[in-house]
Length: 291
Length: 318
Image 1 (cartoon, helix red, strand yellow):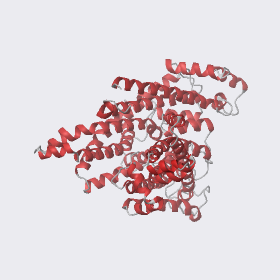
Image 2 (cartoon, one colour):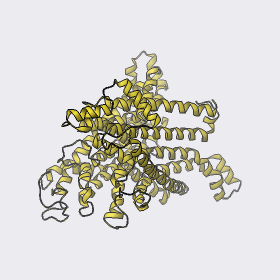
Image 3 (cartoon, one colour):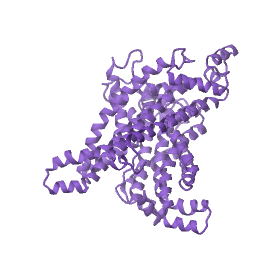
Image 4 (cartoon, one colour):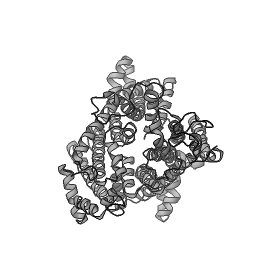
């Protein structure tokens, strides 16, 4: 962790990103991720059919006029696939921003307070970490009913304590450095130390954490959709929901499940490759990314 | 601090965490719009039916009294009847727990030795082709959500290319009389946990193979095979055992999507069913069970870490 802080201190976030592009993995991850994002963003404009139109009999793999056949209700699989990336992608990004933001805030407060506040915040994360993320999400969703915003909130709530742990360790490491001491001795307010001296020196671990959380967000958001619990309208096209709707026809019409599964798989691999590339650059060594 | 006291302290912290978790899980039901009876019966329920279910769930008692009797029931294992199926919750949970444990234990038993061997092999071939392939393979596998891996396996082995394994479990029979249904869920979970164990084993072995005592052993002319088995491997057990325990804890959440995918009658599917039916009491019991398992396994990981780390074992760091 100390090595990570050292290298970023002399490069900044942009320098780190630039250097991480020298790693083959980051480039491969960037290409794969861009490809999936492109499909999700451009898809709705180039889809041959509407999201909800019926084009043939249910679950027919070679319905006339379709590329990948029809789904459980006889809608065009290819069109629904092209329409269905935006929700997974958008919700995952929101979960990541909210979860990493909240975790970072907790880490900046806890890691630089040396009082009971630190203790209280960290013991709270202990409690939230006593559940696997998906179980915590399901408990919340049973209470608040699945809506897109409750899904985002619950997934973010699962990220926040994990991010807080990692980032607090990074903040603690920087908080003992001489330049922080000197900032303190100049009488700077604690929040200007946090934002001016601590935050810029933990961007390395922060970027790695953001990449990892994005990967996990995609998996969780799509996973909740796969359970039929992502809170979207029943007829909305969504990669997670598509798997749920069409899994009973998997034997006769595999494309309705395989297309979204492949896209979700590529997206998680792409974002994780980027996170791994940044982690290796940030540590300056062969550091592995572990859960 | 002696080892016994350290373990006792961790145990006490674990118990405290579970207590606060129980407050949270119980408190969740107080946040329901309406109440738990309305959640399970829906908006169209008749007032009589609502009153009957409220009485069965003791919803008219004050929250503190309800919490105390609920927590007491949890501790004594008397969880009442499910308001949805009217069967005892304990019966439902007992069989599902056995089924889920079977999945998790089999997955751990298969994944651990394979991952340890792969990690060691990768470390011994450092920076050569097998090492790069293992590194990339584990990174890709670690990225993929478990349901993506499960669906890929389903496609290959039961619905698409080869039709040799059943896609779902016949829920009218026990899983042990149809062991072939275990193959794909166990394989999915094993593939999900092995990348982390492999990577940890590789990293640990690299560190050990580069350490002074291994160099010394080599200089003394100890054969490479003996260096590996007598000196390197035993020293890698500690840190790796901790990762194995953490992966076992991960499985408690991993089973949710995998059991749902394969229609496997375990705790994970039970959680999803309870959410769908909005059967809050059953859900609360299941979530507490998962949390207890999670806390206990993390505790074990902690203790293993202390036992295998001489610096922590002899005190200093508490």
